[in-house]
Length: 86
Image (cartoon, rainbow, N blue to C red; front, side):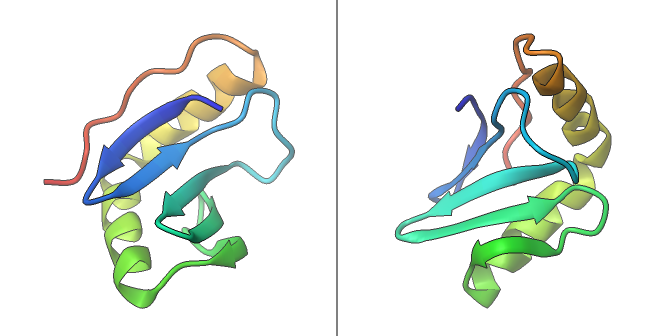
């Protein structure tokens, strides 16, 4: 699963040809979640409120890039890195 960003110990990844709705995978320590690109809601798993806040802030800044990477992943083509939250 390609890593597209990493910040503050949070790893953001996407699977190639993954299922709908469009989402990305988050790892933070032992926490795991699937987060919807459109709503930033947690589809599966769990993140602490602090981690979810950071992920939501990052994703809101990069929604267009996330959508673009989703389309690339669905086509099984290389994904583009996305800048971390600073």
